Image (cartoon, rainbow, N blue to C red; front, side, top):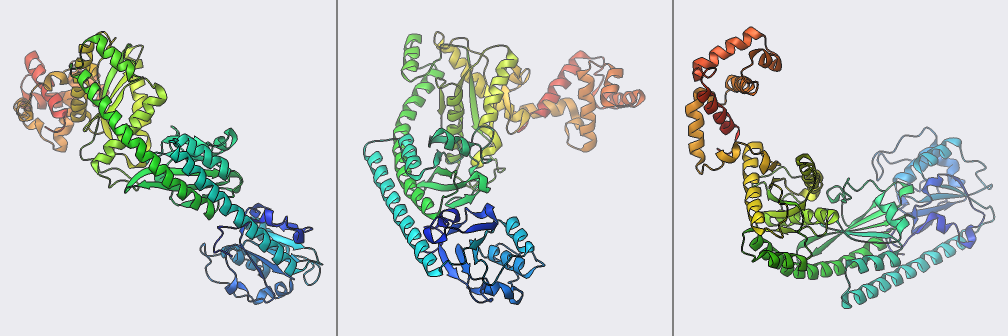
Amino acid sequence: MPKGAGYGLPLQDVLKVDSLQGSTVLSGASGLLRTVSRLNVIEVPDILPWVKPHELLLTTGFPLLHADSVQPARAGLNGPAQVEADPMAQLVAEFHERGVCALAVKSGRYLLDVPAAALEASDRLGFPLLSLPPDIAFDDVLADVFAALLDHQARTLARAHDLQRSLEAVLLAGGDLAEVTDEVARLLDVAVLITTPDGRLQASGGDAARRAALMALPVFDATGRFRTEEFSTGIVHQQEPSSGELAVVPVHGGGVNHGRIVAHSITGQLSEVGVHALERVATVVALLITRQLAVAAVESKYRGDFLRDALTGRAGEPQQVAAHCAALGWDINRPLVVAVAELEPDDDTGSGPHTTLPVRSYQDRLAAAWQQVMRSRDSRAPVVGFSQEIIALIPVSGTTAEVEATVAGIVADVARDRGGGRRSFCVGVSRVVPDAATAPEALTTAYQQARKSVAIGRRIHGAGSVTHFGGLGVHRLLSLVPDPAELRSFATEVLGELAGDGPEILDLRVTLQALLDNNFNVAETARSLHFHYNTLRYRIGKLERMLGPFATDPTLRLDISLALQVIAMRGL
């Protein structure tokens, strides 16, 4: 017999062989999906050192009369076993810890009744205790079960061979990922997904019921992304018995991580053989993805070059731009905003197994995430990844608040829980372009607005900001100053020591900003800061000694307001 449970059968199927007819499950019925790959007969009490995982143990019951003589190990395969008061219950716990599948006892000859404590332990651990008919012959059981296991092994190998041949046919016929998933789902009787490296769906296969059961598992986030960073690859992930089994296999090609294959069996019969079959599938998937990437790289460069020309005003006349966009499957004949997304340059806050990837990989993943999210919302919206930024032309409608809500929803879906170790990013958003198809120059202006917004937003709000050009206010003017040192010098000259970073200085700046926000209404400012009126009057006097008579000099007040905005900008 092969090692491990790779070619084993679930216990509930083993009980269907002829020689085991009439057997009953005394307890531990929740473990009937345990895999049987070996059989062993025990007739001595010191059997523990010799049992192996996935064994079905057969006994006349004689050694169980001496269960109190068994010396349990201090720790089993899964850590310390729970100490049972009853000797036979302790034996059940030890069998469970060692991965034994079940214990089948011939009834009536030596052991009339199984102790209640052992039955309780069996139910609690999901370790089946079986009662065999008294006239059963162990050699018949051994012959029948081994024959069933060998037959299962032959069928499994034949299925793996059929799968290999089917996938080769799909590959040679120029098939795509959808055809591969359909073929795998049919031959392995599973639901199957192919995901990107960060878990976003690329293709799926299987009937509706199986796919629904897979998608109901708690392994996806709110956007439907498979949480690749939370699950080991290349192994079978066991769920609760009612949830079946899940297998996750990586897809690698040319030293590049292309994603995952995720397969789910409702019946819980995904074995090592199933995983090995999926590893064969992964080779075919890697070839298909590599082929797709090669084609997509050419198409992406062509699309990117055209969009860059359109954004910089070099794409031609309006009718030419509109016709070319339509040929590429893009619709720009509607209100839209231009969004520019840029990775944080020094983001080291990522988590998971992908945090040491090259910057190029992070950029590619961010572009793929934007493309997938936009595709799910509007397949005719242009999204292109450049070397340092991702450009999306987002269709919008409604009020300013509704436009901002639309953009916020897209950004939230892209950034959802930093899937797969992606780094954070900033986004700049232009004003609404009513109709880029008839006024391509408006698209050029919007692109410049979005680029300016992302740069200013990072300086004002820091990492992960989403900044709309219409909300920049005075920062648009400040951004026109090319020399940050000049801005810093202005702030220092106006604020003096208030431009520093000490705790008392920061506190005074908060008071000063509150006074400006409340148009120097002392009573309202005191209430907003939770200060006593006299305390605020004292602070105002201190601020005037440091800054001058800003309460009565409107020009000085304007300078102070601008200086505070400069101090708030980062990177100066």
